[in-house]
Length: 204
Image 1 (cartoon, rainbow, N blue to C red):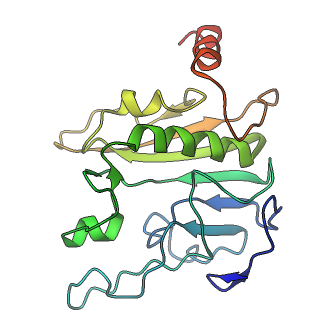
Image 2: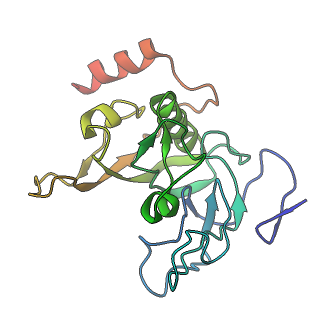
């Protein structure tokens, strides 16, 4: 089966790429000259042709290598050295369905009833495919949720990130996570008790 121009050969694959962009979108965070980085596997939940947002002379497109859901990936444990996670920052009653407005169509939206579980599952799944000693880079804006509430959904606290409060009403921050060598992999993830114990041990 093909998807996004690549051949898909079932679950538990070990892709040749070293980097995973799990929420590719229009590759807006990528620097010029790196938007087709051959060490990176670009995936997204959707695929859209140029101009899908409905604005004249705006040709934003979503063209991932593969269409995949960051909550449930077909890749083997410990497949990537670096993972990029830039999920939607907006929360809507119907999530990605019936999006209105150029910006919302462009970046998508989280579902009002499931966004916390969706991000928690996403973090766990991305940590699963991250190699021990690997790095996860997370980007989020506090448009609809507080940073601290979102970071609580991750299985590990971030090492560092944006700390300076901006004067904007809505601000965007970056956070960097590290996967310890002794962290176990599991699709189901750790329980709330496990995560609480981990935080106590780390002093959170």
